[in-house]
Amino acid sequence: MNMAFKAFPDFHETIEEIIAEGDKVWARIIFEGTHTDEWMGLASTGKKVKTEMVDIFRIVNGKLMEYRDVNNNLDFLTKLGIVEYTEMGKKIFQQK
Image 1 (spheres, rainbow, N blue to C red):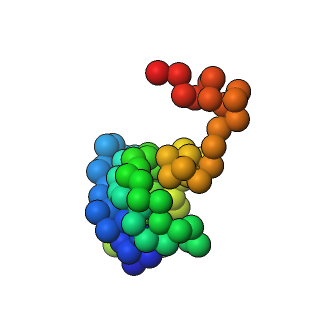
Image 2: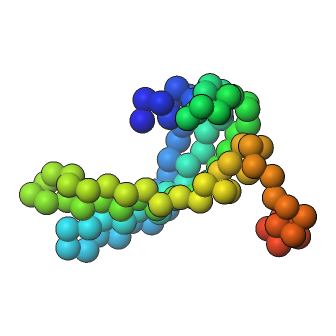
């Protein structure tokens, strides 16, 4: 998390949905932030990004036992300008 806060100093997550059942908690989260410093070897782009992810937690006796983060890296990297869609991808995904 320290790396994320350094790379995206205005890092903000909003929980859109949360579901708890048994020992599992699922949260659909919207992440927003401006890429102002190195992130996993990627130089700062200065771009503000907004992307969606799902976090899955397993909690036993009040302690976090497992954590998974499911996100759309293609969407995230495209918004940062690091990955570009092919012409076919532009036709499919960038129609607005």
